[in-house]
Length: 366
Ligand code: KG4
Ligand code: ZN
Image 1 (tube, rainbow, N blue to C red):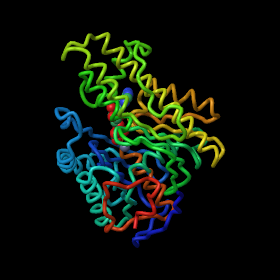
Image 2: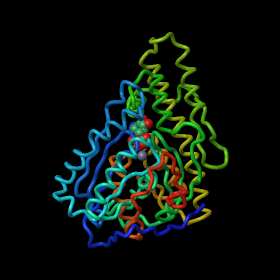
Image 3: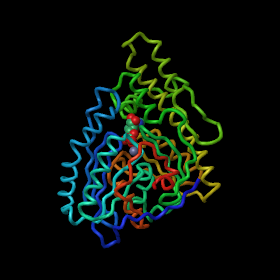
Image 4: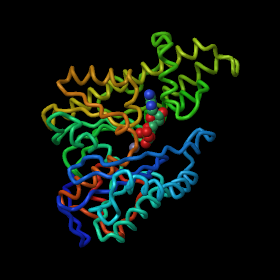
């Protein structure tokens, strides 16, 4: 479904002559702030990744919210210092306002609204998924720019979806995971292999020494129509392989072979699903860019698999720098600029929301 953008003014005006924009990201476990000038150039940015969750093997929402509250004010002050601007010079403030963990969203969007009200500048409530989707349009990332429409493969710890990005506030979800997100699958497989959290990077390192052909693990949904994903069966298959060994007695080479076989299975599934997503996209629009985003885009094997299938389908594969693929505030500030340029702002009554599907991003704003 395509939703037309609606203009919602809160009385504050913005134009290209207004000052820089402050972006704030607190939707999960990264506390981030960035300042961009009105052309989208990054004046300063910082990401503080919370280490507080490591002993728990996953993000603990209450700990995350408290950590955002503890760190955000000083982080914003430091980013403003590095950008060499004062709060009075700001032209607008944007914050991730969903989807995500509600405690963190309340902290970040509440802080942003406070700054916006104090300075008399517009506040922009950002859909975090739209921020990922628009990142590739940051000036200088793609030679010649990244005009709409293009295909987004969002592959993170919390989200896996294929989206036709047709405009600001106009997104068509072509498919997504029906159980685990792809990063979650990496994290669970890594945990079974005795690796720390988050497990994706450690599993990739382990897989480098393994034989990806040793285990013929399932390729869920491969060959089926559509571009939905499913990863829970793959995780169960890994658990069953490991259960054959006595606890704590998995030899290093066997572990590496399981990691490599798992990674190959995910790569083949993603390539198959991406191929179908590109075919679906091509029914609507001429082939253009296929953009990967999310932390899983760091994985070299997966990137290679996606790049190959993109070339086969006549698409140009784009992977933004990793720092912009994982959660960050540059993408939030940039999405704010994109919205401001269309006259889209939000009032202080805008409530952060834990669920906020991308293809309803404007329908559900009011
Ligand atoms: O986008 P992100 O930083 O945070 C959110 O989930 O929003 O993604 C983190 C996810 C984790 O599940 C992590 O294990 C996975 O990305 N990841 C990787 C790699 N690096 C990070 N998965 C596979 N291979 C990697 N190299
Ligand atoms: Zn994210």
